Amino acid sequence: MEPELKQQADAILASLGINATTAITMLYTQIVRHRGMPFELKIPNDQLRAALTEAQDPHFRQTAPRYNNASDLLAELEA
Image (cartoon, rainbow, N blue to C red; front, side, top):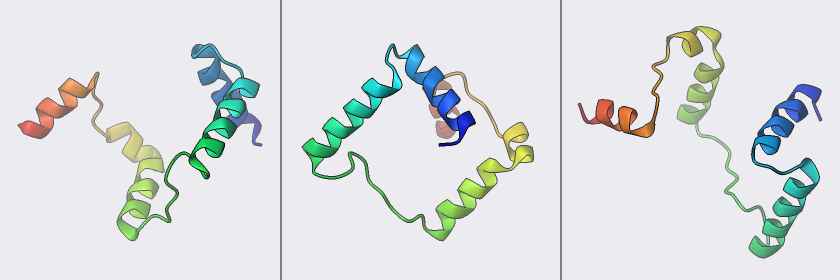
């Protein structure tokens, strides 16, 4: 596993009050209950692939609109 990925995930898990072992146990429990992955796995279509590539662009990240909460986002979408 990439060290930076592990560090980021460990920080998020710590903020949730769990460690990596607990998170993996939770994931495995859900795999057993769902008899597969507990989320949908898909190959992205061209539109999603383009959006994912765009989202990784540093210029896009600097210029993309930001919202403080979902209400602000919804208000702009409804405008």
